[in-house]
Length: 472
Figure 1 (cartoon, helix red, strand yellow):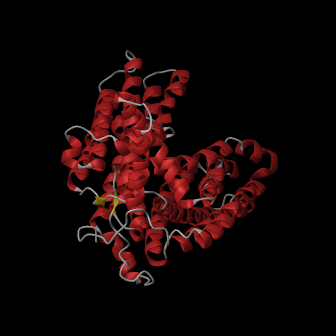
Figure 2 (tube, helix red, strand yellow):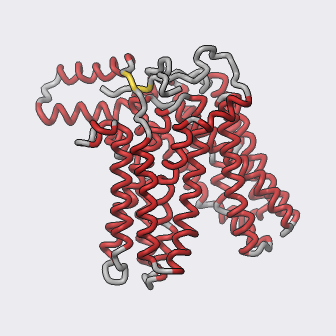
Figure 3 (cartoon, rainbow, N blue to C red):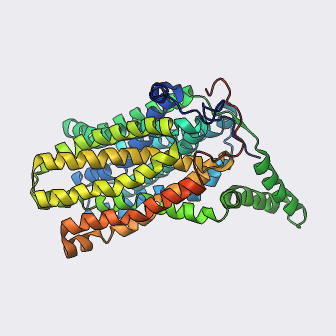
C-alpha cells in the first residue's frame, strides 16, 4: 500500500479565511519553497545538455547535420516519461529508500545517473566514438526525465495547496537559471577552454541538486482509507484467480501501479474527469501555438538579432520569472480557481499585443510592451497551472498522475504548432496572432465551468489531515 500526504492548507483552522498580502508574500520564506529553487536548477540543467547545447557541441566537432538530427531524438525521453512513472511511484530502491524515503531516493538516483552521463559525454570524443556519446546522452536524458517525475511528485506532496503556486514559482526560477547555465554558460566555457571542460563543469553543478536532496525532508505521509480500500479490492480479485508466484506479483504490481492511478482519477471526478483532461490539453494551447512563430515574426518585422536576444530572450526571461513569482503570491492570496480563470483570460489577451506590434512595425517600445505583457502573463499561468495540476493528484499515485497531466498539457500544442508556419504564411502575422488568441477561448469557457462545478480550492486530495509541525 502507498500513502498520501497528511497536510492541509495552512488556513485549515478556518477554510474561509483569506490570507493577508503579508501572509501571501511570506509563503516564499517556507524552507521547502526555497529548496524547490535548487531542485528546479537540477531539473533544468540537463535539458539543453542533451538538446541545443549538445547539437552545438556535435556541429563544432564536425559531426554531420543528419547525425545531429537523429541524436536529437534522445530528448523524446521527456515525452514518454509517463511510461515508467509508475515504477518511480511504486518501486522502493535498495538501501536508498530506507535511508532517504520514497521520493528523495529516486531523485538522488536520477541525479547520479545524470552526473555519470554528463561525465561520459565530457570525456568521450564524438569524432571517434559517436555511438558511445549517444549512449551517454541517452543515459543523461532518461535520468533527467526520471528526475522530473520524482521532483514533480515531491513538489506536490511536500507542501499544502496554498503553497503550490510558490513552489511552482521557485521551481521555474531555478529551472530558468539552469537553462542559462547549460546554454550560454556552457558555450562560454567551451569557447574559452573546450567542450570537455564545459560538460565536466555541468556535471559538477549537478552537485547542487544532490546536496539539496540530502538536506530536504521526505514528505510526511499516511495511508488513505479510500486508496487502501481500492487496492484491497485488487488483492481480493487476485485471491479469486489462479494466479500464483511471480505471475500473481506481476499482475498485482501492474494493476496497482498502472491501472489504479487512472481508475482513481476517474472515480474521484466522475464525468467531469474528461472535461478536466480536455481543459488540461487546451489551457496552454494559445501560448504554445504562437510561441513557435515568435522569433520568425520578430525577424520578419525588422528587429535585429541583438534586439531579439536582449529584449525577447534576456528581458523576457526576467519578465517570466516575475510573472511566476506574482502567480505564486496570487494563488496563496486568492486561491487556484480565481487565478485559473484570470490566467485563461490573460493568454489570448496578451497574444493580441503581437497583432498590435505587427501593425506598429519594428519599434523597440512596442516589442518591450508585448514581451512584458506576454511573459508576465505566461509566468503567472505557469505557476497557477502547476498548482492546479497538483491539486488533482492522489498522493498514492502522484508521479504517475502528474506525468500523465504534463504530457496531455504539451502534446496537443506541440502537434498544432507544426501547422503554424503554413497558417502564418497564408493569413499574415496580424491575423495569425488573432487566430492564436481565438484558440484560447475554449480554455476560458472550461476554466469558468470547472471553477463552478469542480472547484480546485475545494478538492480534497485523498488522505489529507491536519499538517504536522514540520510541514507548517
